Length: 363
Image (spheres, rainbow, N blue to C red):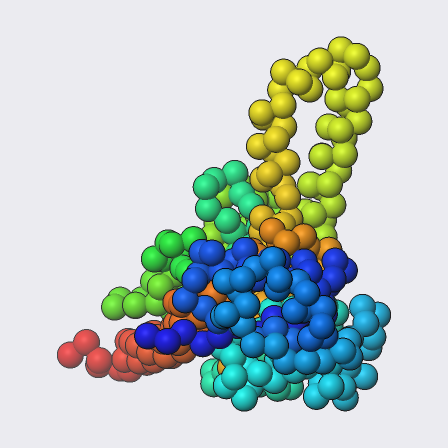
């Protein structure tokens, strides 16, 4: 089978063209069947490819020297979609010239361009931004939405759960990932009407007789349990999700900075650091955002992956790896299949309830 190639916005990100190309080349070592469309300044891309001869033969360059700046308004960026490296990378997916696009550029602009160019899948009202984060267990946790939608009703949250579970099955390998809704408490009476309604719908869809929906809905989760490893997918609206994500990232930086200060405060502390270095290196690796880089816009007719703007070549490689895995495992088809199953589960539940409510139905 010929896999669709991956379009890389080589001009996006803080670290420049070479980092984007180095990251794509690193990712190709694990996914050597993929080819790439590198979008950006041709001279700079060719210079970066000189150290990756294998990558040169697997890549096509689409020249473009116009770049979306980090502070550019999405409304203005959309108008330049046909002239900028980010816009051309997304349009390559729309036109079928690539199966996925990866960019480390302006998040708002990438989101707006992707939604306009690719549109949402049938059965999805709004796309959601999903990312993976480390946990205390060997597996990561998928969290969405992280900013694509500041508000979400019950229907949106149910759709996010379906998309998040499909994504989780690919990145964690669990056939029925545990899905929970982010809430201020785990009791059924807690939270907004939208949260309680979504929980009721997901409970019906996953616990009904004959349900084939590939997720295990387990109710609510509080924010202090997101990284415990007890949940594979955490679902919320984009406003709450973005706040929770920034709080988690800030806490991780706080812990690492606090350890650095503690281990350099005295000679005894420095000796203690040398003794405990293997453990601290493991902690640093676990908290390194480059090892969990690559947020995905779920629910679109195509795969778009957002890399951290400050990602190094290892981080870019991780984002490209995410795109490759989603293409290899056909994420969009998985979501479509799960949406169809959700519809069937709803029909079964509603039909059963209607039958039970009819007088004399038992006869």
